[in-house]
Image (cartoon, rainbow over all chains, first blue to last red; front, top):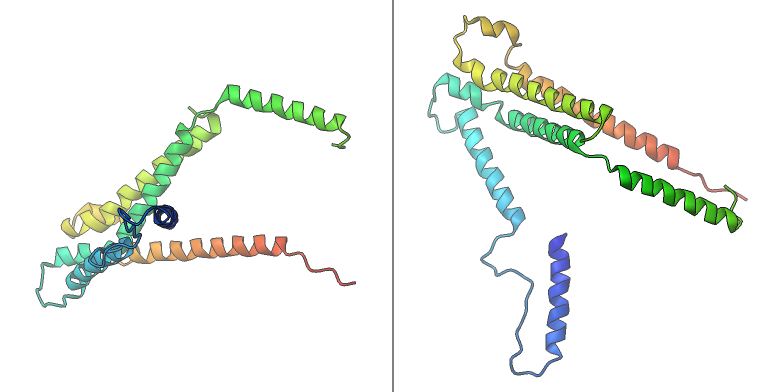
Length: 128
Length: 83
């Protein structure tokens, strides 16, 4: 999402600069150079690399015959990472729910404002 | 600090997830390195279940999300009036 707004910002700036005198015009381009890699590609590369290593160890594709205990640990790894990520998310949500502090004055102020608004609308004829 | 129910719910979520993480970590990572005649194996199911049970939990979670979405869409569906 931020890359879209950045692109439109840069495009706006480019249009502005194009209105200036020709010398000293800077060509602003929002597209990355061809040699740079997008974030999506980076993530896909990382994930496929890790997946290849996991498949090598689990299915013994290179015929390395690792000790049996290491293969026993390796094969549930994707599920284990998912479960631990889920546990981390749950713990973070629970912790932030417990830490979140009440704002007593803000609550009172809000109730006052609701009362005022109701009175105001009632005077103006809105039935509540 | 949040009051009463919020705090207890939050802390119980933290405790539950810590417990689950520890049990699952021991099951997946520690147990293969422990000798097969150790008493620890008594407290854990066979190893295949360490993949099957989270799979079943994921399917149930997806079913619940789908059911909730279906119920919400059904309740909001207003049929057009026919004159």
